[in-house]
Image (cartoon, rainbow, N blue to C red; front, side, top):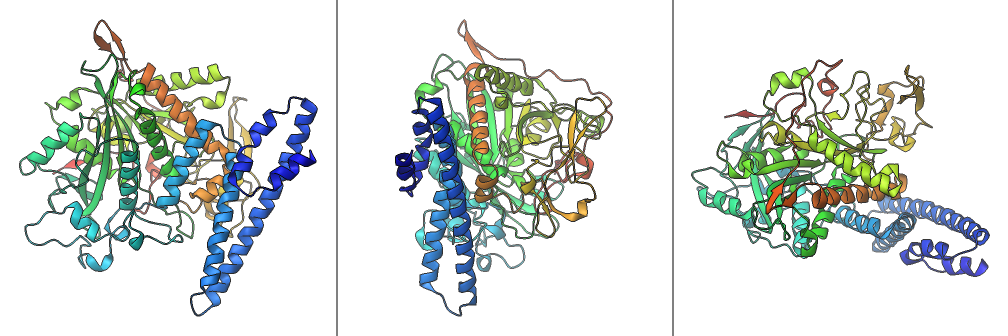
Length: 618
């Protein structure tokens, strides 16, 4: 044992702790194994103590720099080295608990967040203010010119891949365009061809074809941009990726022609379904983020929505191998959408550009859509379908409210959980609580909304949260993600010891309420990690740890199983697909859910409210 202890403590690298599970497994004798386990626990405690000391040192060094009148290179270098040691220790503590597949998720997730930080959309978050129009904050154009990638990149605050224009580590928001460039690089490095060569012309300024509650959207014009549209319609059928550019205005403050970019990746089947006109299927994750909870405004969008982006990247990595596409029976579109936090703008732009019109062949051939928004980080993983309460029927009579895709994904995940003898592998269907959503249903606040409301497609929504907790809207609606006391922050900066467990009258259902004597006004953060100061890589690793990577891997494995074995089968030279369009009866419910008093997981007050249709045509 002394030898083992000496070996482990002599290494200050990530590799030593990553190797611990192997060392532990090699101890055949149970008694010896127990001793090793005790030793590992001691080592873990020592690492945690060292982590605390390093953070204290970092704070001290930062205070010294603040008091200094001039830049202190030596102190700055010490802070840099301290940050590196902190990252290494946090990595050790998390990686030690992960299997090989989960480590892949860890790397994708960590690389994304460490490289892009926060990813807010809108011109003011992405471009140099002094180069924008003083009133409208749009990129200035010469008369008659169109906005292009070349012009956009001359105005950027930070340019990905350019060391001379790189953001500092202490900046929390790098902007959504920075993330857009990062994602394109990752996708290209996996072997996917960039079909538009990275050079696009954006829609014409001030077209405003689509009017939403708080925004106007400008997309490509059917007559003026026919060549661009034709090219995109061809590209969406080909293996590879391209950018679907759009522009948006804020109605209230006259901010015009903000730049938005969706990345559309297409993967065609290579097996029996090849050349048999496979159905089109969409998996969507938004890559922008926001911060409106907590005093610091430092959210990196770790759970919301680096988690959804990470799973989509993992799917791309898997299907980059042509062999893995042989079991596909659908033409798969993995879409990274921009500006969701401002009102699902990227999804509205995509749906209106590609999935509208009576004679739209792509729409006719489409099977369904999965929304990936905050898929890990909460206490449980859920799969939802759209809300079917009467108010929804009255506002949107033609919406596709089918539960079939939701139920199929739930079954796939449940079968996996049974096979693995691990109930935590299931993507659950949440129960109904008084005053909240009907069983398995949710609101229209995220990217699934345009797909079922406008394109009329069957949808499902993967989300990680906890429906048994009383949220800040004083209802059990899934808005509070976790019971973890560290996510329940009072206004004085302290956290609560625990939530109060309560068993309902049925003697079975358990809910969790706020501690006695505390009111909503006493809290700075009420269990909602998303959009808050907590939604960073550092907080997630420290307070959620390995669980978030296990959840990410579970979602990936579930979707992989769905796509390769459950979304179509080739029989007699034809592909048969599951029936996903069966519409539920619209019944009177006890309540209409919490949408009427909820901002719908929104960001900076610019987002669309939920509970009704967003779109009005112009």
